[in-house]
Length: 264
Image: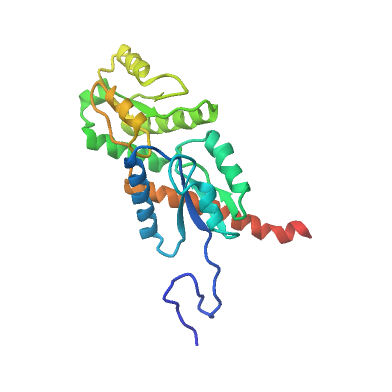
């Protein structure tokens, strides 16, 4: 007699136990600001609420525990998908995370960073509306946005941030200029002055940071008009984390299905 398990997805209708899905390891950078860690834990809770049967873990690149190598060690040889809580490609995504993964016994795959993606633009738009961004004619005529990001020396990171700025500009109907808190140009101050020189008097700063912290605070303080809150725990963020996990899982499944044919 067929039966349905009380744990959906683990037992099939013919009583064969399905393998547990790969664990999702959210990889955060780490911060000395306690608000950052609180935000990350709340994001983890949202992910767990959406996928109660998915093993979800946290690992940090630096500054906070658990560190990623310790999290991976706790998984033994289990399968895991590492989802960077990072908004663009850069050194951490290209080097740090893959190297930590390769040094562990776990069977890992590194997902793409969160950005660029329309769900991030949805979150940025919502945060700007919360801060007081309007849709009136005056704002469309004289408004503009500085997309304030952390910054990186990796040119691919700048490409990804510019792509997000372009998508946000399309959404708002006003110029959006990327700017950086460190390691890249232009600075937020420079971007604000450039927009003012173009006749854009109402310049908002959109906080392109996953959580509150030093850079986010410094960038917001430079806003001549309004500054939005960091991306934080907007529901689209948990959706995006799971989307990146699903993408990586599908790629692994597709590769596995191809192996017998390649071996013939």
